[in-house]
Figure 1: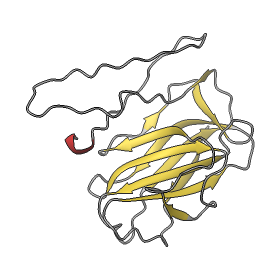
Figure 2 (figure 1 turned 120 degrees about the vertical axis):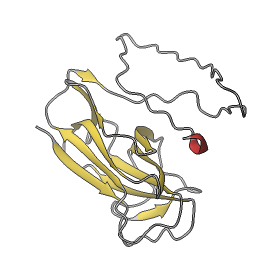
Figure 3 (figure 1 turned 135 degrees about the vertical axis):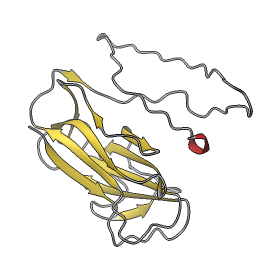
Figure 4 (figure 1 turned 180 degrees about the vertical axis):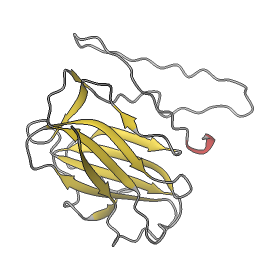
Length: 186
């Protein structure tokens, strides 16, 4: 079975300016587990996007919140574990697929980043619930981000974005989910 790890921005943090990026972290102290799904908690009228990062050493101590627009997220290189925007549905990995997190996995801490469009409303509980299991996974899941930093010309019915992806592993890759995030275009 799975268990839940809910991560939200602490209620004591006041993101009282428009376009605020707020982060909080959770340290994973137990043995490695498998991330098998993510349930987002956000409303596109309040939140522009939510990102979940994995790293060894976050900038802020667990349970605190910090401005992460102009500040780093992790002291070491963060890896994106999940991205949400525009009221996207929950993500469930296929049966037998998981992403290792926790002690010995390279991801000792989870950092939640919430980008608020407007000042944070009273009672806001934007964040995520991570679905985790202690059972080993047959296949490793992961996130790949590409085709970033491009522009689409106005008033065109279609526009091709060329991108390349070079995979040098020995195992075949299977895509099981895709997310598009185009900022002001929806």
